[in-house]
Image (cartoon, rainbow, N blue to C red; front, top):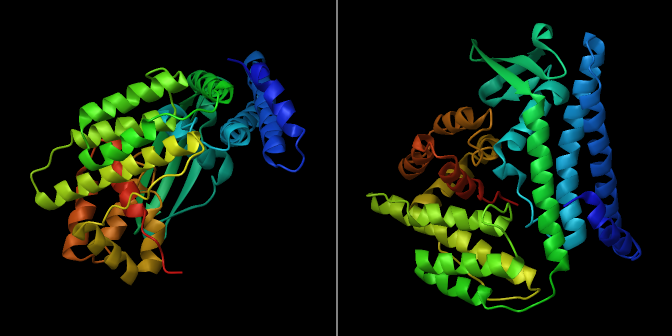
Length: 354
């Protein structure tokens, strides 16, 4: 699948000047074309002078960063949803935003919890069109932590092109798909009550068949099915933690239900899941220290975020109640990125005072 195969859909959508989706898609389409040209030019030029390499590196990192936004906006412009794209599931591209922020965004001043500050510096000795190396110096409580990062450009370009093709293919399949009504939402509604693994596999197969998806599709529905598989197979002896896992599974099931209904342009029943006591206690703790705690919730669902561990420690330093402490430690001890995402998303779902 190439960009050119979607061009006709973009041009047709632009004809409706009363709808912003057409020009949103057109602007995104043009940006993706520009970034493809930038990558080709970058790969052809074999610069050796430091200034020229820096100019190219800054440009290509910013270009890729914008291209990822363009992929999301192209999907929304053409389909009204971002269900067909999930860049965060690609570990190479997911890390790109942190690299871009370190090198191009805010290299001279980053702020961290508890008054920490950080600065990033490129290594000129290791700088080339093929790779770069930089160090980030983080000062916190009069202690210095130095982190070194190497960035290889070819794997980055390869990951971007592969993901872009997957996304364009998913978008094309959807907009070529005729409006239909299936029993998939009804199957999910029943599954919400049972959380039966065989029922989940039946839903997964029906969705793949209906929307012509491969098993490794980056479609968000498929991604959430994968999360549900982990939740159903997640075992804990502690009764309160079992309730938390069941709660997270029902939340994910309700999101599947919402996606399935949206894709068929339908409405359905409200699936409300009562908040378990452990989580309710956590939210009550956050309410008491909201000003200090809110910034610490933002990164909790991203296991690879540079501030992930520091934010968890900062939460514990706010003197949480017994139940909140138990839940924070449950997240702290979890080393599986998907499970950490589920737990962090649940904590991050706290709604601040209006």
